[in-house]
Image (cartoon, rainbow, N blue to C red; front, side):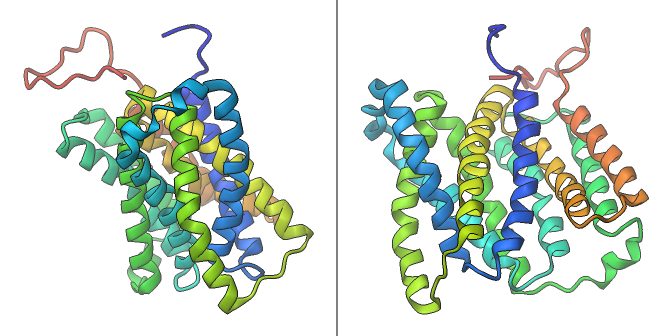
Length: 310
């Protein structure tokens, strides 16, 4: 790996930080903008930045997108149109606790599909890291009181969150596949444009029935969601996933609810709870176990599994 290339570990941490803040901003704007409209505003901004940037830097690669249009279309449908729209819709029917808890299953699902498709086989320490990260998230969500877990009742919002993380898993696998042939910026820009083209008509239909009121807060919020949570986060996520593999990159998703909890407390001027500190340490330990390379001298099993990053 070239020394000039940015660290995928650092970029994935920043990505999860932006996505952690995304939940806070989305909650603030939820009473003013409907889910599909908020998602559309986000991706109109993102595409307006991504596509001109890709055209100026990688114009020669943009001409090759037609050869990979099915995969790019799948990325747009799952990552742009589907995932965030379902998340914004889900929190209308379920609690943030339920939604965040279900979202922590994403790393496990990505690793499971990666294993089924023969993309990678998780090592024992990766499995242990994912389980440790899950324990950390659960500890934060329930403030160290696991009795609250037994009181949860599934509803429509929970089902929508399950569908959302399935779509995100498909997006991640499709992104890794297409970036063997197209640069990160080109793949992200084209898939974002295709997804936005599908999203805008649906959001216009929703806005026509529910109405929309644009104000400074909505515009600034959409700009943040579009630039930081979409342009930078998606580029860095795709880069980190292509560098480390879907399973190892997915482990960083455990940091998202941790950042959400921290930012919510800071913005609301509330004290940091002991359960969040304990849970955060468990999450960090889980991410380290899942993403760190195997120790030197440890032999790979004869099953043919290779742990090298792509």
